[in-house]
Image (tube, rainbow, N blue to C red):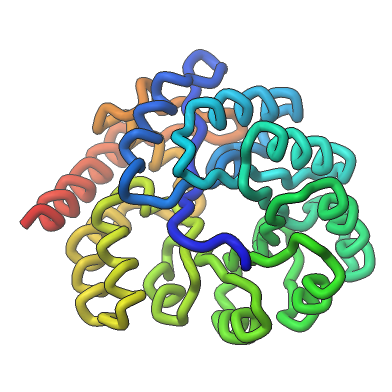
Length: 293
């Protein structure tokens, strides 16, 4: 049985270039009681812009601050398999329930090479290995049957985060016993309607109570009511959220509502300008008011 539920990918708060534990604590407390946990140091967490040592230090602090009832998955994607292994071992040692790994994103990936990479990560851990199917970042399309073959050979691969928009993979993997988590905000309701077991996207973290209500309605088979909740309480913000700059926009709104003390991002990313921030606040306030009504 793999990981299920609402495990949003979260941004990493920075102040003057360093991890900001105070802002992080506010973010976790805001999610607590509504979401099942979170996913740390993935793409949204700006892990590719950090050193391995920094990623370990942040994971250690974050896991120590997290209530025990919350499931934490730590991203371990790296171009070096040795660093992925080290990150995975470190995450498990400090209490993570799973690690998430996408395919390396520099050299061309072949099926045998990817399996060899995942074998080393899998052999190093005793917790869940979440395969991150992200064809845009990894430049690699993962056929459904290839993933099933890997799952047969890897002891801990029981969950897939699906960012690919090929939703036909969902029933294939679920029927084979894998759990599947939604992986891309712009088509989030299509994932939910396709029967995913949870979500690893950003919006549950921004609207924790609303998204929990939506997800619970989907699980109860009430798709129309679930879509109505999502449409009123999330989509007004999603229209100005953006694709490609969602890390900066997420941090901007978290600063605007007092969760983060800073909207700082790491180079090469850039923050949003005043006009975009104004739209974000407008969209967030419209969604928040609708959720209360």
